[in-house]
Image (cartoon, rainbow, N blue to C red; front, side, top):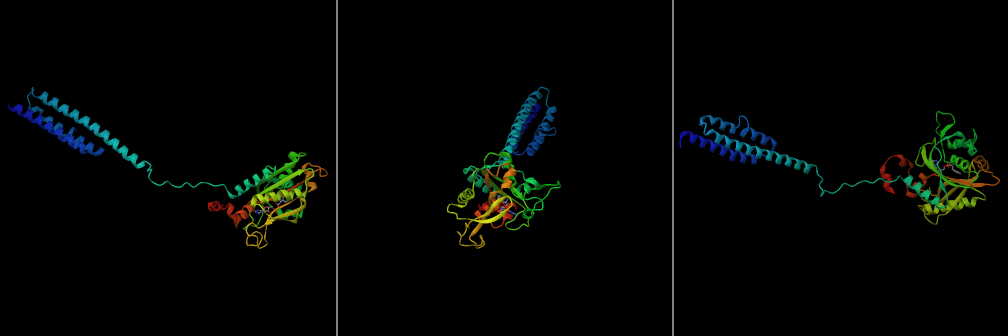
Length: 351
Ligand code: FA5
């Protein structure tokens, strides 16, 4: 064994030691930063493997290839190990991220708040259902009306004092206004179907120039009813409305009809039912009268029938108009109509 040989073996030993040490260190490097530092220390241009190979010059030309070969093998093996390590770290980082973002199925779920139909919408649907069974179809009329339909064709010519009861909001177009009631729909329906018999209900929004309080809004709903045919009498009106009250509020309702006045019906009545809260004994809801006001109604005025296209000598009809917001208030014990449009979802929980 000569000197060169000893140096050669020493270098081979150093390379082998480096391999073992580098592999152990790589196993400890658990982040991309530590792996990069590891690469710099062992395989970089100023790294330890390069440092060892700088001593190749002290070997004889015969000895160099063997050390060079072993060093290259170690370098390749370490580079492969590095790639594997990098891939493992990337995979682990991805897993950690996935765990962080994933759903923990053992956590209790968040309660979904389900929407509900508005109380007026529900009441309207109840009303449609009850009248559908009695053969009434739904007929839609416009919310923006002419003075002619809202007043004149309902027997209220310009200057008629009853117009004051139904004052409204006017558009900048003369003669065009927001309807104060659904009654103009009577004319639309009659003109559409005359001379056929009619049984319709006309639901929709109405507008009034009104002082707002617990039972009055400037925008509210009405449902109009209209039946036109031969031999229709006030008894038919009473029968239909009593049937409606029994279905809407429960069987056994007592109704009372008071004489009233509407320019478009003759005779005119107001219908009350016994208070659904106290059974007629008297309470704060019925203002201690035992009665709840339900709607206005009457026999269609002969002039209105004629303007609708029917011969009043041959045809007769009844009409009524009710306020579904007020009906909902009575039915569900809500004491202020302003809740209906105040956007407070707690109102919906009360039904
Ligand atoms: C009328 O509007 C008549 N057109 C009803 C009618 C139709 C009579 C057909 C005869 C034949 P009245 O102004 O009373 O009548 O209104 C009818 C219903 O609408 C009332 O009973 C009430 O329930 C509702 N209502 C009226 N004004 C308001 C308001 N400001 N806020 C909420 N509801 C209202």
